[in-house]
Each structure stands twice: as structure tokens, then as C-alpha cells.
Length: 49
Image (tube, rainbow, N blue to C red; front, side):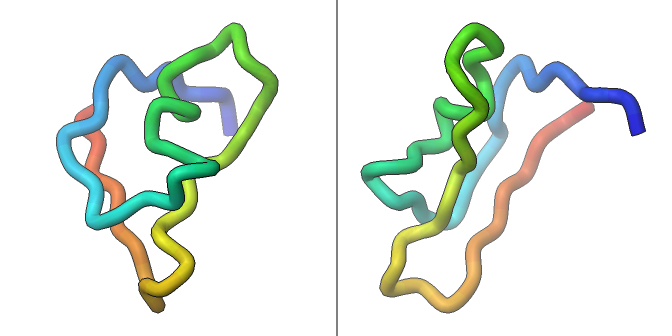
């Protein structure tokens, strides 16, 4: 699958302070993930493509 450029995030359920959702938006930074808060058992991210 070809890479998709994300221009903005509509919403997210939670985030780990070490791995914020902004990691998905910055193409110049090394690939770092977005992770939900470690105390949460699941996380959701909503984007519009």
C-alpha cells in the first residue's frame, strides 16, 4: 500500500505523552508511532482522507 499523508487528525481517544498524535503529522521527523495512554486498553484515531 502506498503511504498516505495525513493533514490533520479529527479526534483521538487518548495518547501517551511520549508518543503524541502529532507524530503522525510531521513527515520530517523520524517515524514514531501514536500510542494511546498506557492505562487504556484500547485507543481510537479518526482521520479524514
